[in-house]
Image (cartoon, rainbow, N blue to C red; front, top):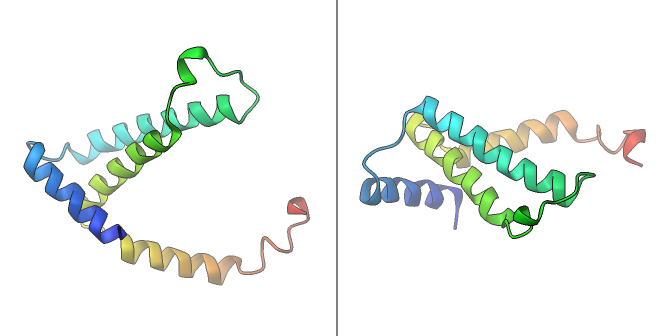
Length: 108
């Protein structure tokens, strides 16, 4: 699936199963909440915090997909083509950082 196909699929789902998109502000709050759920799993599963028994069954991929879903909703409702935006972002990073990380002593 391409990013554009994902944007189309989310839009069709909203039109078919939802009433409408939540407001941009509501979706921003939901994105923050969903990102926090990913952070909780990462911190406990891969960081120094111990993982609670109730968190062990949480699916990291599903939580990441929730983040992606809300991000796509925000892109759709604000008119952002994520394919174009991502390509431009990759070009920016490549120009700006093409040697930066290779010369970073902290990464060796």
